[in-house]
Image (cartoon, rainbow over all chains, first blue to last red; front, side):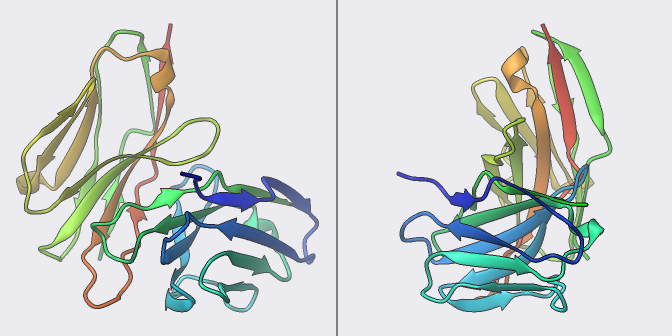
Length: 115
Length: 118
């Protein structure tokens, strides 16, 4: 079974530029998560989708971050414009459905460096 | 409020030593789940274990064991006879039960970097 796929793996941009990350979850998984992991910290949830609807985006900085999952499968996370403090690893995860009894499977992440 | 504390930032041991990683959590819910994940240098988070708040039985899986104590709000992880391949960052996480579609986000601790020297 293929795992969670993410691209690109690495991205370097200058501040005020835009960037987009892509995630393809495990086939059949209804729930998709985007986490932000700043160096030296644990991952923090940015947004959770159930199919193509948003369950939780309370910690997403909506003035610069946006995410979509139009067909309920793959998802895109965008930052526009980027700030230095956005440098982090962006992790995508998926689970069969929402609910704490379902394991979240993580992708390899996209490491973003903002200069 | 939910919170996970991993007080040990870094631990260094020599191969074949036993090592325990501490995890203390805070939650107001009576139903919750606790997790341990491993993050090797490659960066991908690898699921190790999930326990729910009603199951305080300790669990052993090969060289790994977990001790869950609700009385002290702790969920500690022990590696027996450590190996170099165990070197990684280990995260403890908490998730509260969701009711009818609410978020089941993972609240992570800051992680413990384990270095196993040959």
